[in-house]
Length: 364
Picture 1 (cartoon, helix red, strand yellow):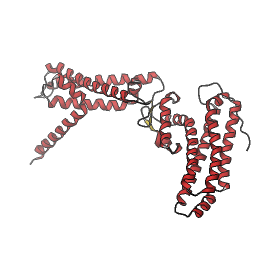
Picture 2 (cartoon, rainbow, N blue to C red):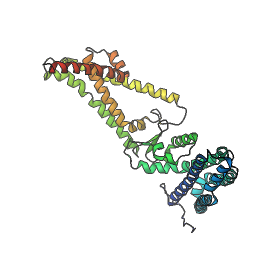
Picture 3 (cartoon, one colour):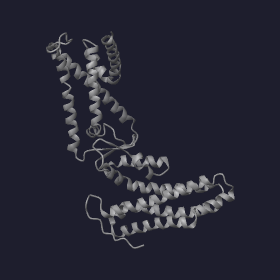
Picture 4 (cartoon, rainbow, N blue to C red):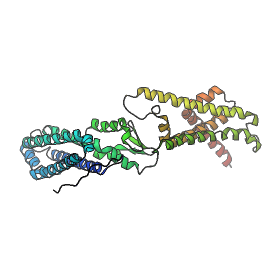
């Protein structure tokens, strides 16, 4: 194999050529280990019903010297290439030397354990379990070092606020052990600065695309405020509707109470959100994306969902205003606090009324 020409990493904040080489080499190692994991799992499944001698012969035939030599050659070549990069790039050496050393030593241990497991093959699953566990550790190490750049590449194809499902997108690159899979996501949440334009929600297992600048994130707040102010047109339209519609139930003089009720419903909804945010923060036992940790970013990521929620509040406000004449301030506030359930109740009544009126209109 010819030596790869490498150059010291330039002093830039972006991904260097040696970064890309490192990530590629590590992914090659991870892929080779997962290939071996698959071959072992396959041969164990095939030989489960065989006798001890048949099982030993079958395993030795499938995992023969040629197969293992190809995998070993691939992994050792990547490790040598990484050492070459380390020799000329101190930044890469400082960044990944401990993990690469762990991979190298674990792979040497795997080769010894694998030879013993193939020769024994008595209780095959028990003999190969240490090998599979060690392979999983190498897969974890490689994924831990390469996952963030993979996510950064994927985020470039998303719109702001769109979630990236980590398991769905990169699950095939993860170790089989569930605890190690969860740890990979928690590592991302712990060191969120490695993501460029993304924020991790560990509980949901997703990364949200965010604006790259704080100014872009704050713009979501201004749009939200404008949307809330737009809702003031509703009480104004109700108060002045009598100017155009006969027998309209509201008078111009009720404009102040209509506006006050709208603001109280908003205040109740805001109080509900604040209490839920405090409860979520109190229950948090690990790094995660919560409203109280960065409320500007939280609003920015959930901008579309918040707009839909405000529109739902508008519907609730209209239904309450028409359904409860003379709505008191306390009723308006607590209705806003439970706006989802209240709106569902009044929507049910509204649909029943529509059905009744429709029957009357279509009655011959």
